[in-house]
Image (cartoon, rainbow, N blue to C red; front, side, top):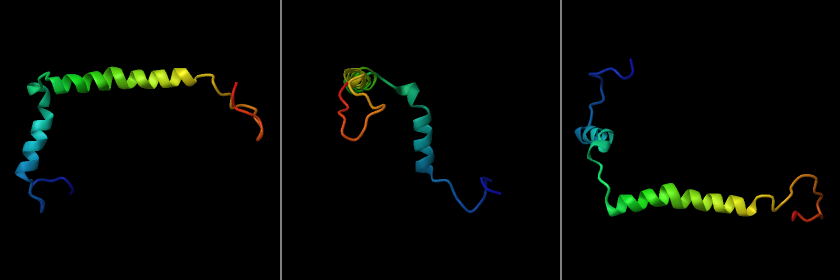
Length: 74
């Protein structure tokens, strides 16, 4: 059976330590200048840029019912 203990694959202690560290990272997390900037960019700046790009091009082009030689500009 797959996944059984005692099989031919031995667990690597380094990988097990890394997995445990990743599972418990929330216990030792600290706000540093680097994590603060990552949070601001990832949660505010990037979504803001996506929103700006989407709203600036919204209704700018009309794709429906255009033939080959007609402009897409509204």
